[in-house]
Image (cartoon, rainbow, N blue to C red; front, side, top):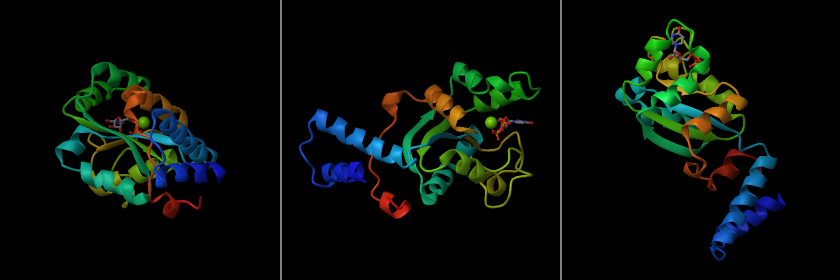
Length: 188
Ligand code: UDP
Ligand code: MG
């Protein structure tokens, strides 16, 4: 509470914006949200089929409307070394070569989303790996028909999310910012 109040004081009253003070304010925000468990992060990616089908806006909107905060975003042609590290646990699967070809077939929109339980909630929002089993209301259940083109990726655990975020983003590419809707999203 105190940390949050101090951080707000800095932001709302626009106290002198020296680099030192900005770092201090960012630190206070981080401590404040961390103490409340609100700064869990996950990697979400719109895969090449999702980009080609112009689903980027729809997928971003679902995460925004749910109440999560966007802290990283980029359009990339995925490098082979990142893809093989990202899917290293599937390297022995028969579908692996086709998966890498698919993921290399066009640009991907890689994102980092932040918020309470974001890893678990994102997986629920994305739905089952096979769209035929994904429930209506999920991204795959609403927008996809086949496992080979399932439009979106989301990290499957907090530990994996940390690794995947580190793989796709440099620390300097993630933006810590104060969302003005935070007080309407959480009781903080
Ligand atoms: N995949 C596939 N065929 C399969 C299983 C998986 O093409 O039989 C692809 C699909 O794109 C899936 C990705 O491999 O999203 C990673 O598989 P995983 O089991 O990790 O599913 P996810 O975590 O994406 O739901
Ligand atoms: Mg997976």
